[in-house]
Length: 136
Image 1 (cartoon, rainbow, N blue to C red):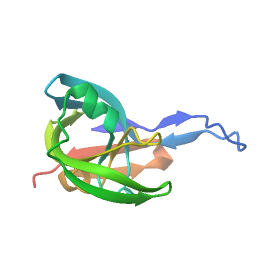
Image 2: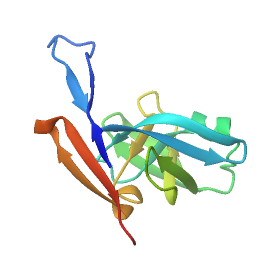
Image 3: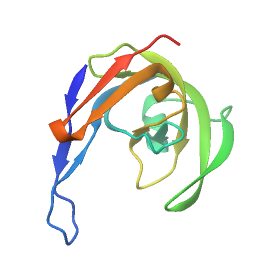
């Protein structure tokens, strides 16, 4: 499925529009589903989801594996658990995600889990990217 990059004007001094590969995803939990805009992030080792979404969906993190990730904002605790999600116009998948408490993370679809189950082709020069499900 082909998608268009999403453009926005950041609050910085450049005044240039930034284009990012983002897709709408539905995340499923005991209380239903929650829709978010997710960044396709080839630089993220893991798929990260803001911990507030776990609360909204009724996902119990008390039995999740705990760990730590390091990023540009330093080290953050993560709670790792399998979750079902469905990118817009693609099949539902169940992957391991890391819930993180961070003001800077909504949903990042990263290498482990998402890139393992999808072929992603970035064509920024055409303002498009393509996601194709692959059998694992």
